[in-house]
Structure formats: structure tokens, C-alpha cells
Length: 352
Length: 280
Image 1 (cartoon, helix red, strand yellow):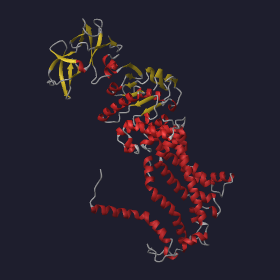
Image 2 (cartoon, one colour):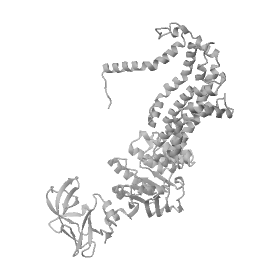
Image 3 (tube, chains in turn brown, green):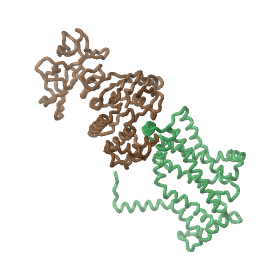
Image 4 (cartoon, chains in turn yellow, purple):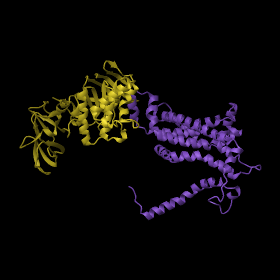
């Protein structure tokens, strides 16, 4: 395993600039997730780390080597692709041993490494099958096996779970995380699914339109989003964002509802702000919050998700208990003390 | 959805298919049966579907009147070399046009494709002059070089290119990460996966070379260098009239490899063309 360092990495296709200067330090053995919406540049960044896309400018180091001009094979990385990219005409065993074979490993060494990887991933009974005879989850495991047999310095994962059904995705998520905990290899993982990012990462890099919006530990991003984009992207359901102004130490929305900011962020009186409240940080109160009309109730067993209309804004609240509300009811919604966020509508940055 | 037919409908459908097959099967049947008929029976009316008497001496005559075994060998080895050569050229060219980005790739490919639009009759005279200058007239070189670097290979290149375009790019990227260079990716990943398309190329190239007629009659002059389609025209009597039964016996022998190839490889042939999006 090795650290990975990105210094002002940029990527352009002609006049189209797709990555605008990314700086990132990935420590040895760290599990870093690049997350963002489609087209944000996360896969391009991963492919640049892999050596599959040339770097327009900036410096990329793996270990203590600058690898900008090295071929993928010389970077000592292994990659798991979105569509697995298993060689259809080879058996699982051959797929897994293929890279070792081309690096001049002896037959005994190849067999030993393949068996070791197959043992870890439960692939022993499948070694003589071809990819076409495997299920999606099995193919995913083989792709991971192919990556680990070589014992590379860095693992790269490009949305590896996006072709699996929801249930299998949860299982494979656990397996990848377990594999990382066992091997402790530096890992860069790309996904558009923020739940995957939150559950797997040591460190999350949130990207948008070719720029890094925030880098931090999952809970740090959740608790202290640096700007409106991260606030809206991290967390499911997404954070409620309500425009209004600060008046006498309280937030007042356009409908005149007032929320105390006594335990929260501070902003000067009269300043336009956007108040952020996570759906799970609402409570039902008698007074001192938003007068909210229930528009939709979605019971989910353990939780109840309720959609409200507040002065033309739609708010979502998530309660960890059952609620007897019905569409048309009017309730008072109050944020849990100390659990509100303020953002500047002009700069979109967080106000503390 | 699979449609289930009643037994009666099945009989009707198979009956209709049998009737439709007659125009395709009859010429072969007539060729084989007429090759063992005495010459006066061949044109008897009404025609005999099954010969009244059998005369197998026609097959011996085929080998007596011409160096037929030598001509058979000529056709076989020329077709084999042309097939292998075309497979090599078309798979590499098709791969390059499909997977390697280089300036003007599409333009060059269009220029190559234009080769298909020029009928071979148009180029035969300049080709004759060229091979005459090179001292290759009455050798097999023109029959080998023209298909490998001419229209048949262009068509094969097109077929291979269409196949390679459909290969997922991730496979090549995985191979790059696994440590393979461009040629090894072609050789160990792309080419084995292109087997159906390659089989189709092999079959139609072999058939094309085996049936080649215009080029042999232009480039070859001595019977021991003739190929089979050309040799078939030489079974004539002193008045230049065809010796029908002997000619049909030679034609039957000529058709055997083609039938064998097609019977065993028709599935791959059709699958290969289906892969490339072409219709037969």
C-alpha cells in the first residue's frame, strides 16, 4: 500500500475544462470515496489516477513516484470496473491469474495467489466457470479477486456496485469494506450514491462540476457541510433548505415563521440566509417553529417520512417513530436545538 | 414469445418450406445425378430425376482429360493462403480502424471502403499490366495478392471493424491495467473474442477464392496452373461443345469442399454476420 497525492490536477478536452485543479492527499491504507452527481468528473479523476486518461496538468504521485507519464501497468494499481470487464473467453481462474501471467510470475506463484484470493472471496467452486455462467454478484467478486491477486499499492473502484440490485449492493458493500479492513490497501472508490460513500469511506471527496466541494470524514460532511451543494448532496432524504432572514437572533422565513438560533450559528441582523435542517432533526411542538401543512405521509416501518408545505416551500421530516398525521393536518415543526445550519445565499458557504 | 403451431399447421408449413427449397436443391441434385448419366439421358424430356443407368467412368475421364488433381491442389492451396492472409490483414486493419484513434482514421477507412465500389472487371486490365511488368503472369501470385489486398479483404476488414467496435472499451482498459501492450491486447483479448466474425470472414473468403473465375482466365495460361472453375470450362469436345456429363462430374468434385465447409460452418457463418449487423 502507498499514499496517493494529487497536486492541482486538471483535465481538458480541447477547450472544455472538466477537472479544474484538484488537490487531494490520500494516506497509506485509507479508503477514500469520490462522490458527486453524474458528470462531476469523479470517474475522469479516477481514470487519471489509473493512467487510462492523460493528465492535462498537475502532478500525481503514488508512493514516492510521480506517475503522470507512466502506463497503467507501471503504476502498481488494480482497478475494478463498473461492468466488471472480465475476459469472457477465459475461466475465472484464468481471469484472476491473467495479470500475474503477463508479469512473468511462475505457475506455482499464480496458483498460490489465485487460490488465496478465491479463498477470501468464496470463489473456489467457481474457478473453472466462465464469466457468462456467473451471477452479477459472483462476477463482481471475480473482478475484485482479479484486483487483489496482484497485491497492488492502490485499488481503484469505478462505481462497482451500480449494476447490482439493491439487496446485493448492500451485501457487496459490506464485502468490499471487509476486504479493505483485511488487506488495508489504499483504496479510491467512485460512486454517485452518497449512502455508499457514507457507509464505506474513511474520507469522502464531494465533487461538483469538476471541482472539489469538500473533503472530510463522512460524519464531518454530514454534521458540518461546507456549502449548499454538500448540504443538499450528503444525507438522504436531503437537507431542507429554507430561504429567509436573521432577525433578533432568530431565523424568519418568508411566511413569517420564526426559529430560534440561540444554540446555533450566528449571523448579523437583517442578513438574508438559507436555513438548513436535516429531515431527522425536526420535532413536533406546540409553538416556536414552522406552521406546516401535512401533504404526504410515508410510513416505512421503523421510520415515518412526512412531507409538509410551509409558506410555499416543501419540507421533509423523518421521524423515528410512528405518527398519526394525515394529509391536510396542520402541525408545528420545530428544529432540534443546535441542529440547524446557516448558509450565505450569495457565496453558498456555511455560516458558523 | 414462442408461437405454438397445431400439428396440421406444422405439416402445412413444412410442406411449403419443402416446395420453396426445390429451386435451391434441384440444381445440385441435377448436377450430381447427371454426372453419372450417359450424355443422351441428360437432356431427355421429361428429365429423369433418378438416372436409369449409372456410368461412373465420367469421374475417371475428369482426371484423364486434364491434370485435375494438380488443379484441385492449386485451388486448395491458393484458397488456403488467401483465407489465412485475409484473416490476418482484415483482423489487424479492422482492429486498427475500430480501436486505435489516429488522425484521419475515418477518412482513410472511407477511402478503403471505396475499393468495394469498383467492379473487378474495371481493374483487371491495369492489374494484368502490373503483373506482366512484375513477371507474374501464368503464376498464382495474382490470385493470391489481389484478394488479400483487394476488394474481398476490404469487405472482410469492414466485417471485422464492425465486430471490434462492439467490444466493450473496459475490456481493453482492464487489459492495460493488467499489463498488456496494444498488440497483446489485440492478440489475447480482442482476437479470441472475434472468433465468430473471423469464422465468417474465413468462410466467405474461402468460397470467394475457390469460385474465382475472371482472374484465373486472365492471369493463367497453362492447364497445370489452372484453378478448378477455369478447369471446368476445358472439358469440351473437338468442336468446343461441352462434354456435359464429364463437366458435371468435375463440377460435383469441385463443389464437395464448398458443401462441406458450408454444412459444418453455416451456423458460425450466420452468427458471425449477425454479430456484425450485416445480412447475408
